[in-house]
Every structure is written in structure tokens, then in C-alpha cells.
Amino acid sequence: QQQVKQSPQSLIVQKGGISIINCAYENTAFDYFPWYQQFPGKGPALLIAIRPDVSEKKEGRFTISFNKSAKQFSLHIMDSQPGDSATYFCAASMYSGGYQKVTFGTGTKLQVIP
Amino acid sequence: DGGITQSPKYLFRKEGQNVTLSCEQNLNHDAMYWYRQDPGQGLRLIYYSQIVNDFQKGDIAEGYSVSREKKESFPLTVTSAQKNPTAFYLCASATGVNQPQHFGDGTRLSIL
Image (cartoon, rainbow over all chains, first blue to last red; front, side, top):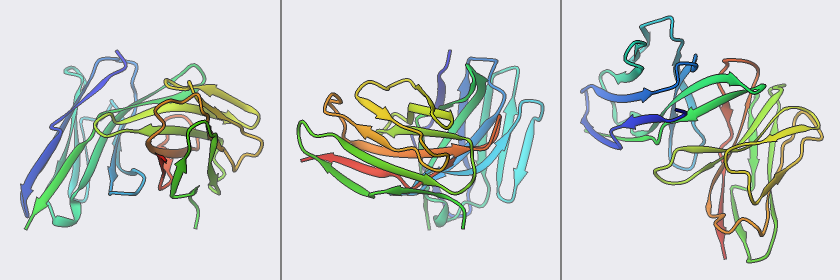
């Protein structure tokens, strides 16, 4: 019940295209859903986050779509650029046992080709 | 600039040796975390600490130990009991409930 399933494992998109990464969760106690971007040799950096009372959140070229009833959420990267090539992690978070418990997906390696 | 500093960037461990990874933050965050990252497995929680002098085991604490003597510092010791220590170790901090975790740039630990 604590799992967050992320797909695809890897993704190749042409420059200017749309990159879509999907995540699904089981535990309805999760109440905060961040996405992280990680470049090789670096730590993950927060990209965008959403709470379950909102169905969509957009920041620049990055959009999270959230479907509470299906327990699914996705990241859309519009006009993908080579600089977006990185590994993306979705996560689901809840406050449990006195701390903020974050469960991460297994990551999607995105390659944007010119 | 505020942030999290992890050192060293690369670390090598000999068999039977304990090694300590450093994590320092100047974000004034109460909560700190240690994660282990292996290819294809996402991030797994080793230990976390909500306040000074208090810490709790995460999902994969066996073979690891931590201390939290200062708010800014949360060092991780990989002991000889950890039989498969080769991984990328990430330290994170957060300010409160439902706030994003901020990560350092990691330490890559390998076996000699």
C-alpha cells in the first residue's frame, strides 16, 4: 500500500515534443505529491508539487495532472528541450508516526534528442 | 546561499571498516533524512530525525547508524555490518508538514 508505481522507466522524446510520465498510488492517506528532477551526480531537486484538492497545476512548461478517483497523477513537459534530459521521480507524501513519510517512484530517465 | 552540503563526494570503504558521511544544512530545517539510491529502485529511507537528539529508523536501517547532536548536522555511519554498501547516499531536510524535501548532492560510496 506504500508503493508508488512510475512508468515508463525510460523515455526518448524529440525536441519540442511532449514528455509524459505517469504515476499511480494505492494509499489514500497520501496528501502531497511532489515531482523531482535529478541530473547525474546531483541530488534530486523539487520541480513541481500538487495537493489532492487540485486536479491540475502548471508551472511554465511543466504540468501535473491529478486524478484522485483513479489514484493517478502525471507530469507533462511541454516543448521538451535537451536541457530537460534527466531522471524524474514522482513521490507521494503523508504525515505518519510523527514524521513526513515520502514514498518515491522508481524514476524515469528522459532523453530529449535535438 | 542556503542549502545542504554533503561530503565527501566520493568515498571508498575497505572490508570491515566503518565510514561516516557528513551532512550539514543551513536552512534552519528541523527535519533531516538519509536516503539510499540504487539504480532502478528509487530512494529508500535509512534514518530520519525530527529534532536534535532524536532520530528514528527508516525502511532499511540495518547496518547504518546516525546522530543528531546539532540542528545543522546529521552524519550517517555505514558500519561493517552493512554487507552491500555500494550506493549513492542522499541527505535531505524539510521545514515542516507537507513541505518539500531539499536534497544535497550526494555521496557515492564504493567498496575497495
